[in-house]
Length: 231
Image 1 (cartoon, rainbow, N blue to C red):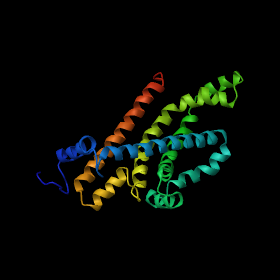
Image 2 (cartoon, helix red, strand yellow; image 1 turned 30 degrees about the horizontal axis):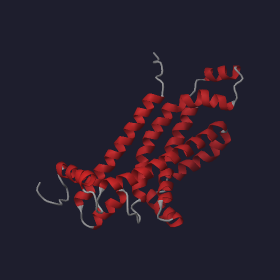
Image 3 (cartoon, rainbow, N blue to C red; image 1 turned 135 degrees about the vertical axis):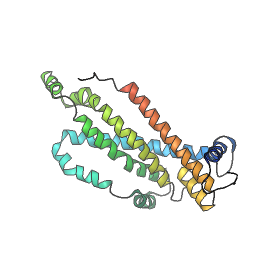
Image 4 (tube, rainbow, N blue to C red; image 1 turned 30 degrees about the vertical axis):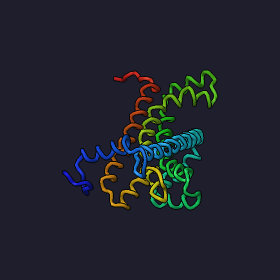
């Protein structure tokens, strides 16, 4: 309970070390708030890019059954590549910069959004489709006024899963030659034997993930209209 750097620290030491890194250490290599900001930026950009890519893929698949049947297996197969194997390849191709980290994060995000969006875009009621046809609505009118609103609950479910994947992707990409980010902080803690730093960094990542999840849940409550309950 009194060791400065125990292998398995008690919770109060982890919280105290995180507090020092966030609010009291203004300078130095272990200023946690700087690394949190870097990881949040990478995860946020990757989440946005992956969401747009996932929605684009889902829209194409919904409007073209042959394309869905032909390319959905490749979309699924893309997720079988271990992220630890993909990150060094992208880093060697793009370099140690923000783009490589965003690519890794986007790769982990788009699948959850695409699969959820495909399911959601197909969930609209058949009678509603018939009503839209009776009004001579075109494909895009059906998409924006019927399919997309019906798919919002599914999309937000995919986004919640993707948000945690975005943080994982950002931190994994930071393990390779990065100077900033929670992943780089984990490498520094392991390299210099700062076991307490490893625990406080994991706690910082968890808090960041819970915050992003909560923000998405709040946006979902505001955006998605409450559906009438069925018997």
